[in-house]
Image 1 (tube, helix red, strand yellow):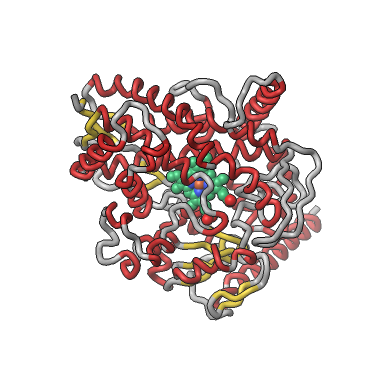
Image 2 (image 1 turned 90 degrees about the horizontal axis):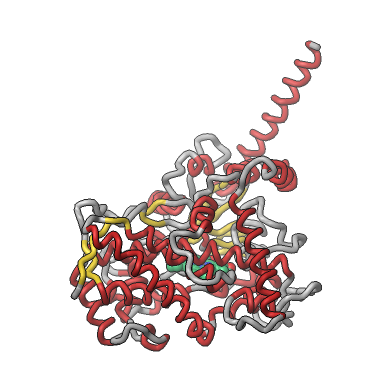
Length: 512
Ligand code: HEM
């Protein structure tokens, strides 16, 4: 027995020692290449700094380290080698010019296998598979399709206005971001997954997606998988598969309800009941069992405009996640600025009155709201809520500047630093100044990364701008939004992947 115990202890110590040597060696990876960067006190994982700081989003850490180490530095997240870039030329090289070498994203270890799994979404996909999915999705966001979605958005906005009457009547401050979250979930469920009619304040998906985005499920498994790559993703995927039998994971329920919606939609289509404007309709039209992707090139490539059923489910799921919190948080952030700058709010009201005189507005009228668009973009410049996803994985060895980049290395654009760079945005870089968006220099246009850049730029950008404009038209035509004693003095962002204010307390005053 004693021999067994000693052998066991010896094995554990040996394994730990081997791992420690591997991690120690890894920790100096960037240093050996002459690239500066933080070497973790525990040697192997800058990741721990991130994990131990759940309330301090990674994008703030990247910004702090840029101040300390300069615009290009290396770090480790578990075993992952990350080059952080706050240099505009390099960022453009990665996202645009050298896209063929950086067409993959930085994604978690437990996500589906791009080459083997049948269900992969456009966000996770890379190479030919990404190009095929993106090509099929583009029609969802064409001008004609966006125009056809306006009546649905308009209806959801009207319902939000009815809900808003209650807190306004009480004349007490209230948190407007709750209403925005209900609105944006309503819109995305109606246009993406075939929800019939409105479900505001009665939509279980709101809480479900909040839970998914807050990473309170089994995301620690993903972190562990990055720290112990020698165990391989299959070990952790197996563990995940085992755990989901005991843990109530919100993602799985949502997936089931999406599958049900797809089946219903297929029956409706077979009976000629529905039009093809919603996203499921467009995806179903592309449905096929066998798909053959060609080798990836940036330009010449034959694309099969087909999608299997598993991809349809995954992409509908993605749209719910990508289109809900982002839009709601931006509406909340913009509202915070509008109540801090009442004179800008009044200019916006004048613009709305002049461009959209009636209760209902058209796509072209919404397009004329230049100040509104500038306000949204400036609020997102100062508060880039999705910057962690502006990252790529190198798929072919190359050099960036003078730094050799191995296949498999990750690059992360430090959007926060670039958006506040005085050399690019001028001395007033830290101020809220929407007019700057009327006349951006080429350099400023290239340095604006709130929606990413290059071929993988946010596919939903025009949709979210349209939805937000419509929401502000409805609200500002009826109310003045005002600061109150409970309004926070700063727009402090919280969150794990997508950032947003914890709340935005406001008071509304009737205009008439
Ligand atoms: C204010 C709202 C939004 C913000 C700030 C935002 C931001 C972003 C960012 C930063 C990216 C990464 C781009 C890159 O890597 O270069 C992205 C990608 C993406 N976004 Fe958005 N987004 C918003 C709204 C939406 C909406 C409404 C949808 C869909 C309904 C959407 C769908 C997507 C998808 C599918 C991708 C992945 C594109 C690809 O990999 O090809 N987003 N978004």
